[in-house]
Amino acid sequence: MDTIDKLDRIVLLKKGAEASLFLTQWHGRKAIMKVRYPKNYRPKFLDDRIRIYRTIHEPQLMHDAKVAGVSTPLIYMVNVPQSTIVMEYVEGEQIKQLLKVAGKFERNELCRRIGVSIARLHKQGLIHGDLTTSNMILSLDGKVFFVDFGLGEKDSELEAQGVDLHLFKRALQSTHFQFWEESFQSVLSGYKSVLGLELAEKVYEKIREIERRGRYVEERKQ
Amino acid sequence: MRNDNGLCSSGYCLGIESSADDFGVGIASFKGEILANKTSGYIPTEGGIHPREAARHHAEVADKMLNEALQEAGIKPVDLSCIAFSQGPGLGPSLRTGATVARALASYLDLPLIGVNHSVAHIEIGKLQTGLRDPVTLYVSGGNTMVTAFEAGRYRVFGETLDIALGNCLDVFAREAGLKHKRGLPLGASIEQLALNGERLISLPYVVKGMDLSLSGLLTAATTQLQRGCRLEDLCYSLQEHAFSMVTEVTERALAHTEKKEVLLTGGVAANKRLQSMLKIIAEEHNAAFNVVPLQYATDNGAMIAWTGVLGFKHRLFVPIDESFVKLRWRVDKVEVPWIQ
Image (cartoon, rainbow over all chains, first blue to last red):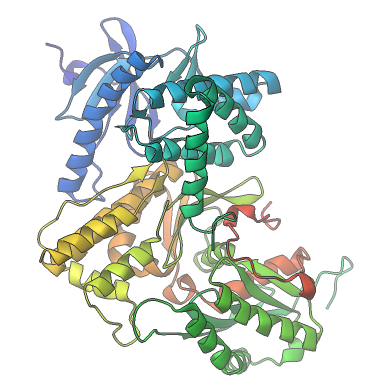
């Protein structure tokens, strides 16, 4: 039985807010070790609950995403007590970086494909929960990979789907403010191509409703 | 004293804040000194802020606050270079009362009028008071819960509440629990006191969605537990731990995302020691400096409007009186901030 402790944490790739990503080796393959270290700002009881929940759900959702037709890294090992997941290292480029350098046509096409993937998740009752362009990779063989399902959930409600897309819109607004509107339109066209006009319209209406619920939104009702 | 480019190197700006329950008048010098900061708070006899009652309070105290501020600053109206006012976001009747006072002053004294975004003002006074230059700011108050950082000409929103504000969540829970305003102490302070005697952490909803969070479910669950007879101290403690962990998590996400090296905590809820300690921990973990805005500048105040007015004056962001409508839902990320870079 392989254990986490035997693995080398070769390089710290990213110290995120929620987890640290290490580059490691898994039976001769390049792999990612995702460790959710305890957060001592919150009480241990609450912290354990959050870290264990996310460590268990993330690989499950990644598996379900594959079934839905969305590429996600292969899971090699999960260790719940140490809240650690070992998974495939996907060679490729982060969509966040790609969008910044891509031409208009390439950019819109990428966004359309992202919209297709989001719709496939939603169709299968899956919510990513943290859709940002940092959490998407274009692999060397040209597939769009979704990573970081830590905040994901299984939910078929319109509300959850609306929030998921709304958050992605907000991520585009804050990170790619120069062309976010056009990108989001492309995302929606890809989304619509999978779900069909009628269902997609319902989700769009939900997004508008969610936005009106927020604080200080211009279109909010009095 | 005017420079060749028409900009004043010395002068004073009078700022009026009236977006919610406080009416404040502040005076800032062009060098960044706060010469006066007077606030009068409207305290509802019961329930939350009644907008019309708040506006009535503002109208009643306006001339008194103006006089006191000028007296404290030791200057006369003729010494002023401009009038700034909180143009939004906020409650309509409250905002309009402050705007009316500002327009009257500007037109009587023949001074330029500057409409200031309330949220931008909170960040700018925080920077002035703490010396931070480019922070990730967590702004938590009765009406706002947002994580912002400067990027490409504006303060961008990196996380915010999807429904109610943190201070609102605490206030409503406090009222449900029958807590009353004590000697001007906000209700949140009562919750903080009670939470110190909390012994048991009750499991409540923890809802972080991407960089945003939701507090309405947490409030409903806490209120339900209260009605079921849960110990109030335990609930105050649990409510704080859950809500503060959520805002701390999204702040840490913004910090990791932007890779900035400073964290600023402001707004009325910034006074909470427990929240301060949580943010200090994440700031240290990311090798970032951490500062809390002093209370008189963290809650709504006129000084922040005056100081942001000074910054606006230097870039001639004047608004003609007939176009100086208040903007009830003026998001922080809609405002150009030309004084940075």
